[in-house]
Image (cartoon, rainbow over all chains, first blue to last red; front, side, top):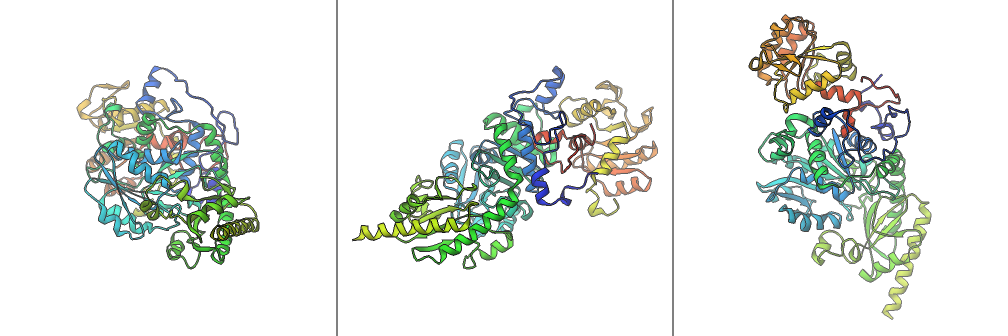
Length: 438
Length: 165
């Protein structure tokens, strides 16, 4: 007997959603459909597929059975209607906006984003004629104040990378709703296990699947999830959704596909024409990762709590920005939106500034010095010298990537080993600092 | 299905029963234009074993996808199981009146089409009602075909056999 989706718990859905046994073979795990293309029954069937008039696969740039299982899995875990997976988190952001924007269109974004997203929005999106207004996300009203009649969306990271700001999802969603535009949330750092932004009124969620969802540092991937609740016909801001599409013989995506029209548009136009398809192999690895997402996130959070406490009491540490600490200004928002924990990506300030920061990341032996988050392995980074290097000094400070900032992504190793590693790295940095001063 | 707040939250078993039990569909508002949603919903349902009879006064007498179109439900010479309504919500009441009159078993209103009073009237006459859903999409969802497009079917099952095919 089938039951309604919401009667199953998160852990069950993390393993089963989108992945019924293969109907052709009975294979219990989702097969890796390593194929570029799919045969047509006849010319009429091919025509129906190309015209989006029947369901089915044509070419793996647009859809693939292994990738589709991943799409349904993540849509389910986020409480969404549908999803489009793609090659990376950056591709997901491009696709999410491509279905909304046109040359001259604008959007408002939190200024506290992954450094690569700031660059993408400011420099690369501007080549399409899309203009971003960055605001401080800590005051929701800032989003309203920055809105213009040309704005098509509000964008923010739920748990900001690297600053660990927790945004007031419900308040910002209300502002977007009043403006009649969708609220797009990057939920990468929280993962759907810790927070489901659609429940709080967000309309679209994007992820870098590369991070906690995949979880093992093996595979790049991104995804765009649609809530199915946004009314694209409420105003004339979204002709791409409501007007006849010349590339599909005048088909209107919202009229034809209703509450998953945005997903179909994003797949049939964005993914098809921009081309950032996810490989079936990566989809398989990410699906396997998601099966243990609940267990992994619990341990990520437990380890992060221990390490944040340790750092907060360390004499070489100036400050720790982790919403899980009671002293955090975001503690109240975290209790509301992240009751199961605040993830495991956070920053701290090392006494001694830029030079000391560089020395800490060069002295660790268990933490890996690299530019990623959400791995089983613990990771460390000095944003000012790496991910945020291309920004101006002013932008770096605004993004929480000042000279003394160290970012951690706490992994699943033994917590005491991680603490010992950081302790020796901080001691080494302090020693060198002293000897440099002498 | 009596609580209005829950009215559109149809259990899968309710939809499945309708899709498995009945085969003759009268599609009110069926278009002869090959690129209208009603046309390709009709084509899809035909491929899944339904007989779909178009009802459209503007196309009466024309043949759409091999089926003669009628001006009204009352003109159809065979027994109809499901009346599938591809019209604006305010056009629903007289269609429901006809559906009851011809002895249909189900009134099905398309995506975006809702009419509480007409639905209540149909239910009072013993008909089953589905509002704001697409037959093609629901068939695709329950057969697993909708999942091919990354859509959340809400189905969790360890069985190889599909619910409907």
